[in-house]
Length: 382
Ligand SMILES: NC(=O)c1ccc[n+]([C@@H]2O[C@H](COP(=O)([O-])OP(=O)(O)OC[C@H]3O[C@@H](n4cnc5c(N)ncnc54)[C@H](O)[C@@H]3O)[C@@H](O)[C@H]2O)c1
Ligand SMILES: [Fe+2]
Image 1 (cartoon, rainbow, N blue to C red):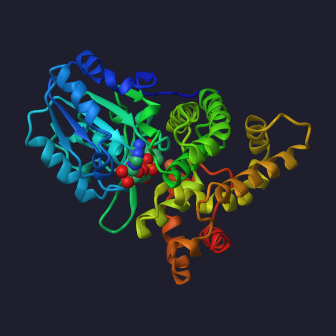
Image 2 (image 1 turned 30 degrees about the vertical axis):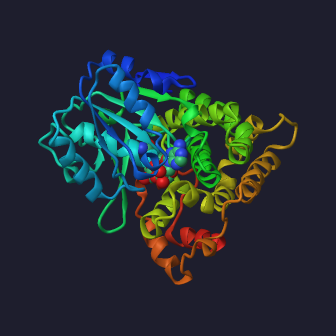
Image 3 (image 1 turned 90 degrees about the vertical axis):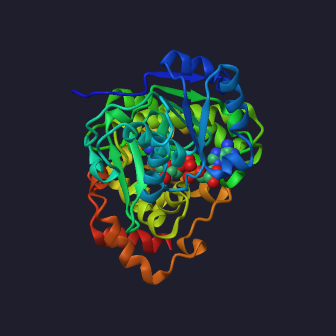
């Protein structure tokens, strides 16, 4: 079997690792850095110690703190223009997937003749990029180890830019930064990361032994930690396991791409700005049930990574795996019906028409999905 596997070159995982940011900037030759983050992060001052550490290391910084959730194309363009007006030679992404995805695009576009509109899709980035350090503050997207940025276009589509140029130089995993992450964001981003592991493991075209190994370890870590991380957020061991698990899942799906859960989640994010992890959680159990007849062997294998290995028959294990997620979403106190997040019932056809456009993802699903299938999944989730 042939496969390729690419990931971020350096991974540093330690409590308070972000305090050593100066050292890592020096290693990459960064002398003037742009920090890219969102107002939620600056409001709680999560950036201040990093800015101080850079000052101590004699690295002047500029802050772009206007990233919006599910970053719209207009925000990316604003951020790139902002970066162009400063003489920076390195980018530090600090925040959840929205900030990290924006940081990647700034690093790639700031010195490029290409614009955002030129690079949507796969392998369209023709230039290099500035040195890039990513510091996640959610344990979710895995953006610190993926070659992907997701942008919300003017017509509410979520489009991907996929290029190995976007793989960062350093992923700095500091679980201390997630200790104040509110329970509902911890829950939603954690479920997103678990979905990355599941969908990588069942990915039809690029499933490979490296991604499999990472996906299994990711699920073991996160299934053991997610409840504690949500309800006892200061627990550093749980925060560490969630952060590492999310990164491992990111490495897995960067090389064995995600599928129908994400394809059906994107229209929810694009139209109603339902947070990415919550969009995934809302459709997850229904997509797993739909996939069961095609994917039960893989789901059974994954069940052994989250539960005490048992001698249940394969199909029963797969059902137990699906039931685990059916129970997990309400247990984490996330809404689990589309109606609870105010999706109008009359929109379901429109959502299904949008969902079927996500062929980039649907081709990876273990069972083929028609527009009618997507509609009935949204109806079940309603
Ligand atoms: N690049 C990829 O591979 C990839 C993969 C999956 C999803 N995504 C994208 O990532 C985005 C979602 O990212 P996300 O789920 O990490 O959320 P996010 O970046 O949109 O942030 C959500 C909220 O959490 C807050 N927050 C973040 N860290 C915090 C902390 N430590 N303490 C308190 N508040 C904090 C932010 O201020 C923000 O309000 C979406 O646009 C999605 O499409 C990208
Ligand atoms: Fe995701």
